[in-house]
Length: 131
Image 1 (cartoon, rainbow, N blue to C red):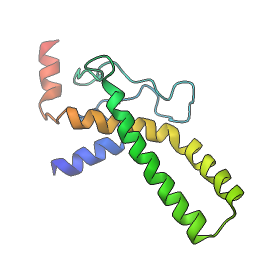
Image 2: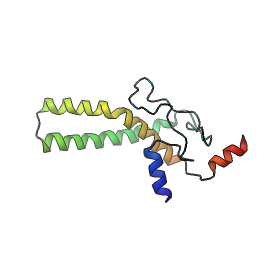
Image 3: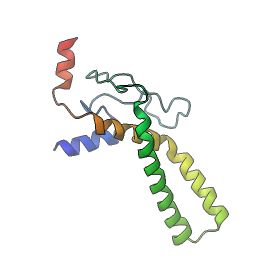
Image 4: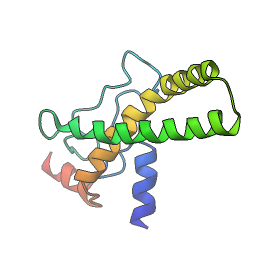
């Protein structure tokens, strides 16, 4: 049950500790001036979303993996499956990367944070008691 809840919280970009608070300030990933803004702490449980300076450097590796996977899928569909010309392939590929970048950025950060922070069912109660 916890794995389903964790996966659902990750997909919805919620706090890894309580699965309630939002990771990002703005829900719309295509608000290109502010898509990267994250809360400093979870508004529900108080979990710090940046434990140390440079914490999300490791998320670049996850983002790189996503980009390689996206490139492979795009190549297989366009170049091998549809047999489009090189110009059409690169045009569609660049468009795909442009559209996917804000989502890849957000999910890379979320996955990296989920690797480090574990779910704690009592985290909201503990946070309310401390305040």
